[in-house]
Amino acid sequence: MSDEEHHFESKADAGASKTYPQQAGTIRKNGYIVIKARPCKVVEVSTSKTGKHGHAKCHFVGIDIFNGKKLEDIVPSSHNCDVPHVTRTDYQLIDISEDGFVSLLTENGNTKDDLRLPTDENLLTQIKDGFAEGKDLVVTVMSSMGEEQICALKDIGPKN
Image 1 (cartoon, helix red, strand yellow):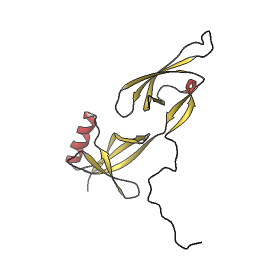
Image 2 (cartoon, rainbow, N blue to C red):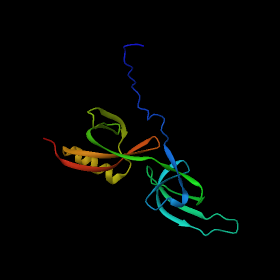
Image 3 (cartoon, rainbow, N blue to C red):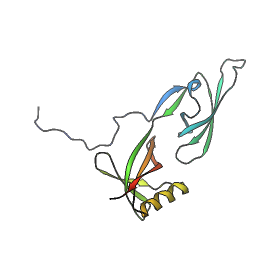
Image 4 (cartoon, helix red, strand yellow):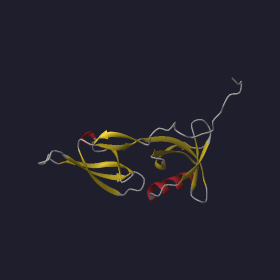
């Protein structure tokens, strides 16, 4: 064959699915579920009794993990629901640009510049104030179903 090595500059996740199936009856409060194609954190689950024709139903109330909207769904408890893969990653904050994007430092030393500041006012002020004071800030980025958003902030002390 050839002596050349092939290098792929791809950020793909090997075709892995954004969700996985889980039986509706096994999804609990504080878990995750996909409702109306949005990843949600389950805040309430109620199960109805089996009716005349068999299926017990699960009523899910979830809060969209990115925009905070409340969504509801009713699914037979024996059927499968989509559950999103939700990951949290910590990055060090390097810079905040004027157009609302942040520059983050990844574990391997590269920068990540494609994330906007969060829409949550409280978190937004904490990040801007901490950055203006010259503190070393670590932000937690939650990603699911191809979306990413800053969801938490840690102060690791002043810059040297």
